[in-house]
Image (tube, rainbow, N blue to C red; front, side, top):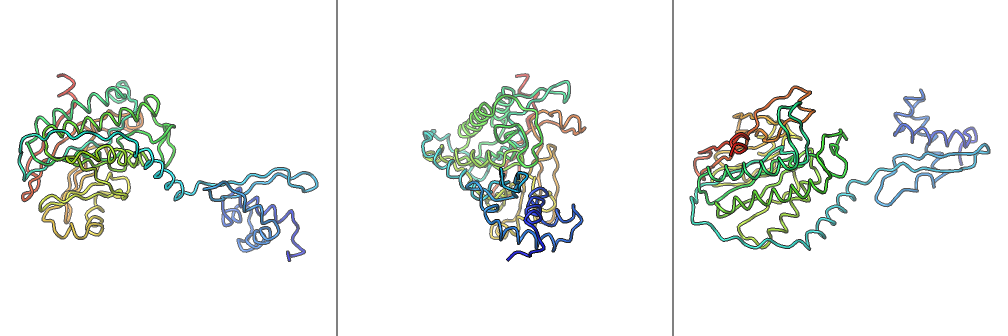
Amino acid sequence: MPNPGLSEDEMLEALRLVSEYGSITEAARQIGLKRETLQSRVNKAREKFPDLSDRKPEGHRVKGVSTLYDAEGNVKAQWVKSTEDEKRAEEAREAAIRALAASIPRAKPVPKPSAGLAHLLTLYTFTDYHVGCLAWHKEGGDDWDLEIAENLGRDAMSALVAGAPSSDEAIVNIQGDFLHFDGLLPVTPTHGHVLDADSRFGKVVEVAIRLIRSLVSQALEKHRHVTLLICEGNHDLSSSLWLRKLFKALYELEPRVTVHDSELPYYAIAWGTNLLGFHHGHLRKNEQLPALFAAQFRELWGQSKRTYIHTGHRHHKEVKELPGAEVHQHPTLAARDAHASRGGWFSERKITAITYSTTHGEVATNTVVPEMVEAA
């Protein structure tokens, strides 16, 4: 039985405070009450009013309850504050992706090019490409929109392929943040920062799919086998996932294309005596990556003589030889947006193709800057 010294109003007020401040600890701190005292009141309120904590939408967790009472203390209205259960939401998204992928027309196999150099692999890296970003030359020095992103990406890839060795193997590396925003609203997915966006999300999706198909098609014209790697970025947490699943279904009947499918934002591919690692750079600093990859990919790490880890995220080039691995931070080909311009962040716009030998590691690098293809 509730403590006769504790009124219903006091119990309901305890629930309201926890709802308002999000936790018992914070509510107690805000009103200057001992946490144990407020906890006791909340427990008694839940015993007397169990329905207040049970009403919530399917797939949501209760964050708190707000209740409106009349002058006699009767409940007039009630709001249950809830948050979407992330695990269930993720399961629902993946189920939708699988259902959509099942009906995607599969790409037809493309004839192989003539035999190339079997001991070489060429890595084409597009990082922080920000399809859907809008940039103005008066702020950042160059313009950027959907049309520019598609045309420049296609032409830059053409120049890289033309200058690369005829290696049998290639990796088209979408190194994260390929899309500027991750849904109908032009905001960052984790912090909700408003972004400068070009056009509707549907158009952004169309351009992203067309461009990735173009990159893979151009690689297939020169290389006998292509691995498509789509890394998670902090701007495209969900989009990187559905893009990966979509292209895996699209190339299901193309034996010359492998879509690297990993649920973790850390990716590893063995090439001869080399370990090629990939991470966008939004979750771990570059200096932390060798130890992480050694632990995460213990067997591949132990078999390799050289390890190269590729990152992006910071929009500028940096190559560091760290214990156990060389970490290659790639620059971006995209123009600076208002955020980067006002923050005073500069980097040379460029894109590279790096060629690796099965036994000797990195043996060639090919670089393209925008002026090379814009003037053509």
